[in-house]
Length: 206
Image (cartoon, rainbow, N blue to C red; front, side):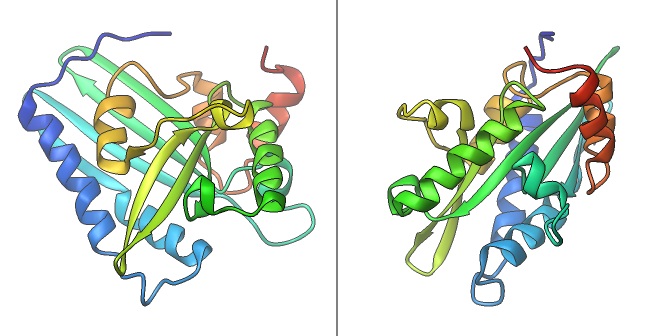
């Protein structure tokens, strides 16, 4: 379902600044490994990026359970979910994405890890049509998170990487990315994703 959102520049810049601050606040020296880094980044992304008379943009983050044989990450392929609650005038849309995170760019991943990523993407595609991959690139002692299409990666294509601030503004804030099914959005609000698992069994993605 598509929604025609057109935001003025001050809202787009507020969202961009919100995401940029979240990235800058996570020191890679203190969060060196992927799981704690992603958890810290998600905690900082959560919150109100903009609120005013002309609209509001609120983000919620879910860190998917990863410990234990039956953990949600094992069967869903996802590391995290992001939910965007976007309002402009009388129009309100709540959308969410599922994503897997990897430290390094695609070219940095060993063949075995690349194959594992493709398998994780396929698991996410059982739950949503457009899973994402967060690639955290290392640059001169800092990190640059990039978002890419999981579907294109799984198909062996050259997936465009957008910096995280650009992704939030160009894809998540607009009509392009995000699953708006209410049952999907509700299902990613718990780290177990159990409600989402039940939904996938009774309503498979076509």
